[in-house]
Image 1: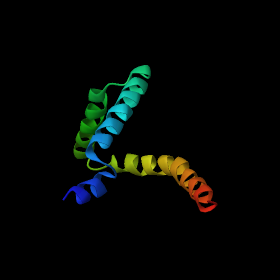
Image 2 (image 1 turned 90 degrees about the vertical axis):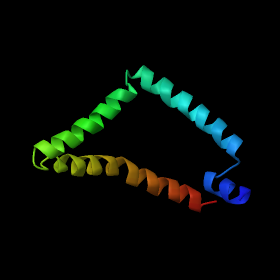
Image 3 (image 1 turned 180 degrees about the vertical axis):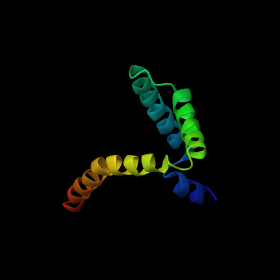
Image 4 (image 1 turned 180 degrees about the horizontal axis):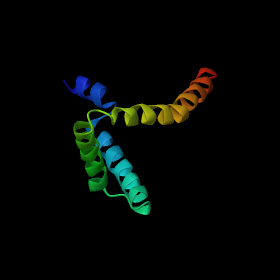
Amino acid sequence: MSDSVNRFLGDTPARTIVKLIVVSLIVGFVMSIFGLDPMDLVDGIRFFFLDLWYTGFEALGKVGQYLVIGATVVVPLFIVLRLFASRK
């Protein structure tokens, strides 16, 4: 069982918890610098679904727009990282 837990977490539970704490501190610091609040994110998701419901699914165009905008950053970055990884 311990082996399956380690495989699922990618490391031992204690090391995974420490990593999560460090990353949470960094993300919290960056979010506070930009003035973001976790409730703003939750409210944004909630308002997105409310808009989706009330506008007759007209808001689905926003999802497509977000997908294209994100893909313009993610896909080239993925390709560059895979190219660097293949040289090793």
